Length: 343
Image 1 (cartoon, rainbow, N blue to C red):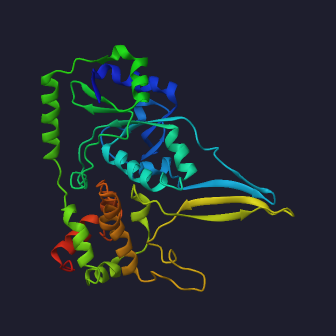
Image 2 (image 1 turned 90 degrees about the vertical axis):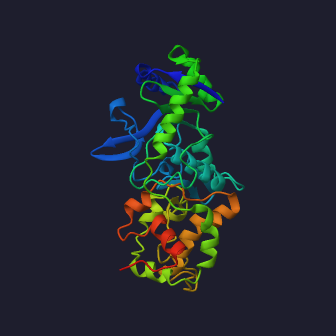
Image 3 (image 1 turned 180 degrees about the vertical axis):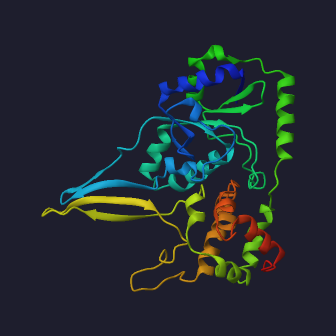
């Protein structure tokens, strides 16, 4: 992989020049809320590592959209929301989350809506420092080696820039004079020092490698009942999780003598009480404890068995969001120690 160097004075102008490759999106603060959205001005982009509460999946797996319009003769897919985009300021854990979603949505049968969003989006990664609730080092998602077109590591005095695709190479060629091919041994040492200093900043962690076995042994543990008594079934954990991908669909008919309408698709959550409700009124997971077990089994065991890595990418959003302190860290700790947490 090609690695280049850039002086900070060129960074803004280079990023702004990327609009030639598509509409620029990124983490922006609007009306006091940090979110992934279209960038109207460079100074509204937040590069300091603070993460939007709603993850980058919203740009590829939208919260709600029309899949197609139908009438008595058939249906027409609706791809009107898809545009060429360049998404800047993407931290490593978010890039890993897209690689996880690729394995879900790009496997046969391919989800055409997700696939078209991916095909039309460039990813410009950006290094970050861990916040209080980040534990991406535990999930092996604190660094990234694929899934981006360019990746900037901010070392203060200069950027190291990884070129990850042919599109990234084309972006560099547009402003080739901003980049320096001469990455020295001292530059690499500065990068290693930065990595070591960053690693010492992590405050949250857990032993992921042992979790699949612990989950298997804990299926009937009273710990699930303890957390079920606390859980509000609000589904916030699913909404903010970068790898949660469940959705449902609804057909909306027009008030018309003709049979026509549209199919809406929107996020769903396995934490909702009616998620497993089927025709006839049977609910396979009517109990909150069963829904909790499903959610955490998927994050910490089942996905890893299938793909060799956890569905959790260690962003810490569940830690910051759950109003009753149920999250990957508290559940992993309780299951590891096999003790119901103190009241």
